[in-house]
Image 1: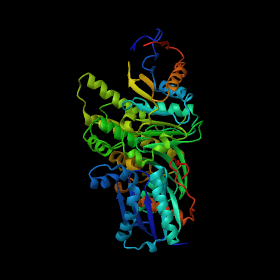
Image 2: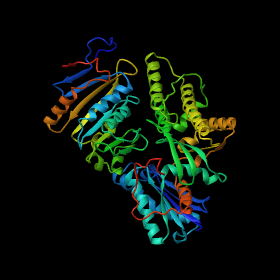
Image 3: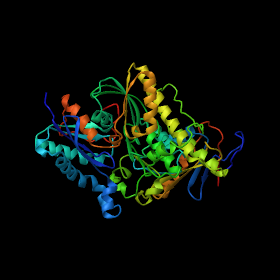
Image 4: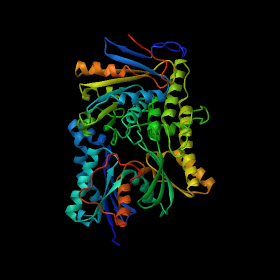
Length: 340
Length: 191
């Protein structure tokens, strides 16, 4: 088996451009992110030409910086992993083309990675060696999905959101509460000061579809409640509302995950994605897994949001399993989670 | 509009105004909003652009879910707020679904290669269109959703904008045959 000692990961699916260097699949030597906002701050505002080219401008610079930080030369790399979707086609193509060019010039293999699969591998970066099968809950601003993870590269999508992602509901409720946008993490902090049972909010029941989610109705219910109270001149306790909302979302996510694990006879649960950093979700999932006798894997909060380390890690296992991509691989902006 | 009336009364649920070239529909549930989107999809052609506006929870994504169902798009349609753009192929026409809600500035659309979709081979719809007004095609269908008589009901205002007068008139004529989900509680009238 080839060793793949040094893997370069490239991520450019949405706002951020990121590069990481991973040693032996587990040891993170460099993990850099350049966000659009940082780049624009240098120029004192959004420069349209810059906005369209920001991934292109950042990606080579980031790769060089990552290599320097890791103390390797590019010619020492053994493989490259790059996110190929889902995401914005223009952004994805910058990463993908860079990966191909670099792989070609260095004569090393490269693989395209599903961005969502990358999130799952955030758990492999710091945790103990994880065995399969697992039930994975991938929950972020753009996605909410339950998956059965049967092995490296072998996943089954059980259900996903039908409307808003959980993280999106968080951000929108947060903005309505005047907590800014994106305000998910701020709402999480405010909720700790509130009473989670103060306000009763609806839970979506999806007939004949136990593993799907819907958060749009909950979001609207919160907004309606706020409008009604405002009309009646009643001051709203923001902390109570935040706590009640958070309790509702986390309970739904936890209950479905635990039920899926039981239904598929799996006793390990894994969380991934930006909302996996939410304190209440981590706490509630830990308690539920404890009660059910399941093992729970939680990613380090630092690796929950988009990063290239998780892409490098997912790519490492793909390369080790013999996956290789050709020069004709295209970006897949609408790549589903059932085709990781 | 006639808020809070009993369902058996003759309501002005659909109004097509001859003067300002707009129509209004009142829906009483998310399902009806979706059904209106499904109906609208029947009359959409390659290159049609829809600018959707309405507050959070007004039902913009629900209306797009209806459009997708009407276009026979096979995949589930979810909110693109975070991801900015969702592409759906495999239906009668491709559907390009944008959301301007979290754009820090409309110029960010340039980074998405918006021209390819705004002037593309399918139907393009943007939620929070007013946040990207300067970038919207001159010929477009403006749709606004507002809460009306109850928490679940919505007043949908649709106005073809720009383009040929014949196109605007013809679209409104086609849409004036709308029946809501229950097939009752509607009547065409003049504003």
